[in-house]
Image (cartoon, rainbow, N blue to C red; front, side, top):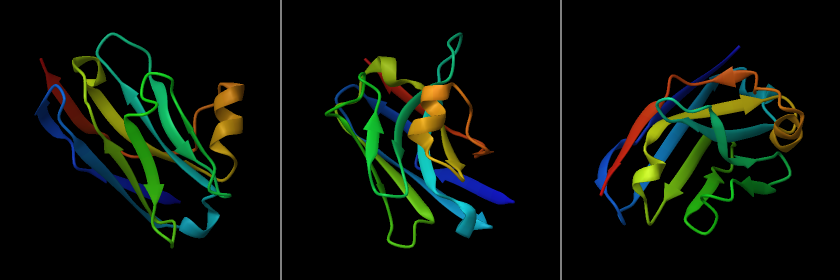
Length: 125
């Protein structure tokens, strides 16, 4: 089993920045890819950014150029640097992990195998 714990959420004004962190524990050697998802009230959950085991990344169009996903060398910590935040970025942000390619399972519409509890990000105008 894999456990994921997010931190770093909070409230910020539009144009500000936040950095989310996710710490993985448990059977982390099974993890191939990790990513960030978000869900705003009344909206469906959406993928924000993912990073596969080969280091390749993928971003939602709405965050390209503003958000950056990264990992530590041990691949047990995941980060999301969020700059130029907008009110529409307000959501619960979830860390996710899978034993396969996150980009592939996103294309298939399949949810990742492992999820964190989420951290709230609120952007005020």
